[in-house]
Amino acid sequence: MESNIYDTIIVGAGAAGCSAAIYATRYAMKTLMLGGPMPGGLITEARDVENYPGFKSISGMDLAKNFIDQAVSLGAKYQIDTVSSISKVDNFFEVKTFEKVYQAKSVILATGTHHRKLGVKGEEEFAGRGVSYCATCDAPFFKDKVVAIIGGGNSAVEGAQDVAMHAKLVYLIYRSELKAAPLYIEELKKKENITEVPFTNIIEIKGDSVVKMIELDNPFNDSVALAVGGVFIQIGYVPQTDLAGTLGAELTKNMYVKVDAGMSSSIAGLFCAGDMNNASNLLHQQVTSAAEGAIAAQSAYRFIKTSPYLVKEA
Ligand SMILES: Cc1cc2nc3c(=O)[nH]c(=O)nc-3n(C[C@H](O)[C@H](O)[C@H](O)COP(=O)(O)OP(=O)(O)OC[C@H]3O[C@@H](n4cnc5c(N)ncnc54)[C@H](O)[C@@H]3O)c2cc1C
Image (spheres, rainbow, N blue to C red):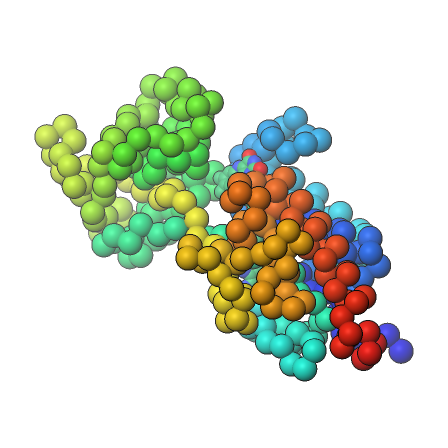
């Protein structure tokens, strides 16, 4: 009779999770991939991806769909469930979603990151009512409006250009210097409807039913109040490592899961791949996440084949 226990359960269906699933199925492992709140992962927010080998240019959405399709076509079981907890019971992992409980010999966490919050007054109140964290997704809703983008890194600078295609005027507000890649900055400078507001923080978002203005810590054009119809917050990402942390996996001071070259965490049988771990020099990209997913699957395979407890109980 076929066992109900998976060889590996992969939590996350971004580049790392899908690549882990592709490699795990190639090792003939009984594999379940749980896609969670963002099937396809963060890349679904990217307009165009032009640095993933094999594609000169592809939308983030299409690339993510290809990843999932490939994992499923090779035999991985795929569910969109979100994992609420993971525990180790005897020598197996118990993976709970809000509706089901699964068992596995190994777990590969590939839960990525989430958008960093600004932490200012009005941010939560106006989320979805003018405050957005995804320029690519929400830019068309701000047609002919005046909009603020907060941040000076790649996602803010690229996001400002996305929004500028629809908005009348975009203020790009950042607290020190632009940290985006030179190519992005070069493109930014060509846009006539983007105004840079450097060395400035926003301290409050105000409005009625929707965002109407922001308050700055430095006057701009002689005023600390800036009338805007939308605020895009693009100030980086925070690793989603709650599940790993609760299991007792060792984390760095910035809350990434510590892994070795084989993507093994400090917990036997728990592997972590992609933007959530401290590998690949923290270069958070599709290509690094995919590579780490492949390595994690190989390590999980070796683990279930050599762990004395699992070999004995198989
Ligand atoms: C706007 C934008 C543009 C980008 N452009 C590029 C680019 O051009 N090239 C490039 O290489 N990279 C780009 N990136 C970066 C790239 O998207 C990330 O490096 C990559 O998505 C990381 O993959 P990952 O698999 O580690 O995590 P993610 O893609 O973040 O995937 C995490 C997965 O975990 C799932 N998950 C989380 N919690 C749970 C849970 N509790 N239960 C179940 N599942 C869960 C999520 O639903 C998701 O499926 C861009 C990012 C953004 C935001």
